[in-house]
Image (spheres, rainbow, N blue to C red):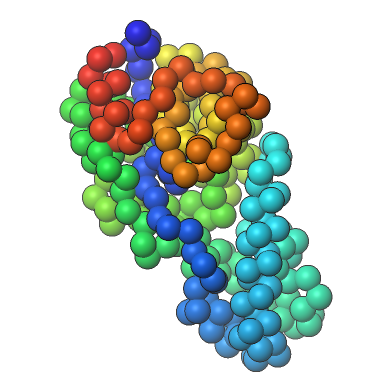
Length: 244
């Protein structure tokens, strides 16, 4: 039997919402950057830079970095490379807006059972928080608001705003500080052993693993085991019903 939680902390991607992986950078973002830099690079060159940068950024994210990069640093390190200086300066000046456009996905959808699990937790007076690594927390916050569930969260902690990233336990502690609860009495629901389960273990919170495509790619032997595993929001609602 899992301990009765006093708060519920949830990851965004793979837990609250999901989307098919993008095949190429959004064409509207390519055109926006092209116009921003005055056409000094072709759309094809911009698209390749964005695609190569996304792959390099993904490799960096898979390492255990305790601190998050600023949005400008992400563009500098992974995209801009040897772009003309005027183009680099133009992108840096708009790094926040461009990061939002790069992060937001029109095909995000709440995972099955998530509305039901959130309604159950809210109905039982369980405070909730989002705890997520991301290039742009504002994009996630806007999606949750449009999906009609943003109001259910007492706080939303995103790595680009916090300056740290999971598995750094400070991400969880930021949320528990905001909720005024002890991390030892919270459940943290994530879809990655290497980031979420490890983060929960470091923060001394109960770790709930929600299965996703990313979860299935990880070697379970290489990372801490969760306290429980669920398939989707319906499974999480079942666990909550039993514990509450």
